[in-house]
Image (cartoon, rainbow, N blue to C red):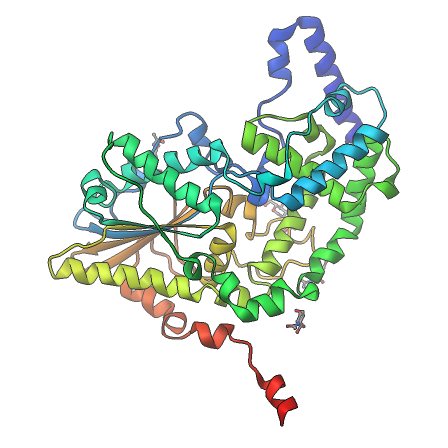
Length: 458
Ligand SMILES: *[C@@H]1O[C@H](CO)[C@@H](O)[C@H](O)[C@H]1NC(C)=O
Ligand SMILES: *[C@@H]1O[C@H](CO)[C@@H](O)[C@H](O)[C@H]1NC(C)=O
Ligand SMILES: *[C@@H]1O[C@H](CO)[C@@H](O)[C@H](O)[C@H]1NC(C)=O
Ligand SMILES: *[C@@H]1O[C@H](CO)[C@@H](O)[C@H](O)[C@H]1NC(C)=O
């Protein structure tokens, strides 16, 4: 497969040289072939490809009220920040890969020359900040949500402070929530209003505040042992062997971190600059599947079903969402709509525990280091769930037969697990989640018992 891949590349390259520049554009697609494996570093457009034709397109028939007698009362949107720079840790990994390749790689392939003459432009001070594309992600999403739910997100509501903006304290999130408001201001040509938001880390970064999570998962190396084991699996070895042989670098010098850095570099260059970088040529489809699985394993054990506290740490946010919906329903019934929408901006690490708490994307078997091939068709796939600007939107409706609720992930309508209705009664959903809504208290789930301490004191 590798040979045909290179042969094909060679033929296409020679052909385009012969035919001239006009064909070279065709020869190199603008989207890397592996772009749908980028996980949490993936572009939002990959999960909604129709946006490539029109970034503001909304299919009105898909966001219409469940029936004509329903009126939308409130929406709560939990949104991940937009496209960002690599964090300091990943910039260091990228720099090490680049140094090794420049000093040790050999061969005459044109992509290798392109890699060697590539300029390392990532700096450690970029530290995960929002990029311009990330601002656009939120400006455009704001416009689409306003078009989708015009009775909840409107100029009148914005001016009357009926839309509340809450964010994580991280710069990339604060910048995202500002960009979201900027999108609305531009849409309605609003020039006489300031941007407003509240910072609330206990809601948007609940994982930092949950002591049990911090102690038993975040600071606990064995909690992610499946990820470590997968790093030295046969699958990962094969990826390292393939890449190091393409670069003609000794396999022993090419660590799993470097394979990952090459994958990240391809994804960052694409998400940030919309470029199909020559770094992408280092990886084929099967390499990308392995590296995607490695990232999904990490999310699974750190943010998803791997440990129960991962999910449970999101209970404060889960409770808060339902409180807001209920408050809005009460206000509506008593004649005074006080808030029509809550826009909450956080992280992939905010969304994954919340979705897991609600039992979405739960596979029958756990994701483990051994089970890469068995998990080929897993539903827990962060590329699909949490790309940049991923969004989970709850919409509450007052209908003739009571309150109903709809849920959208990345602007696609979802059914709640084990409920085959696209807009179930609110009471049914409450009953379905009654254990979590009436229990799952933060103190109980997140406090670390001091019993060990007490025992030694006795
Ligand atoms: C909108 O969605 C409906 C229902 O899925 C579909 O039939 C229709 O073709 C879509 N319209 C456009 C313009 O995409
Ligand atoms: C660390 O994780 C392992 C595996 O999940 C678990 O058995 C152990 O109890 C954890 N340690 C702490 C201090 O919570
Ligand atoms: C992993 O896959 C093997 C078969 O390849 C299966 O026997 C085993 O039960 C799986 N383990 C888990 C935890 O899913
Ligand atoms: C995954 O799905 C494909 C297509 O439906 C199927 O051919 C394949 O056997 C499945 N693989 C596993 C491991 O379940």
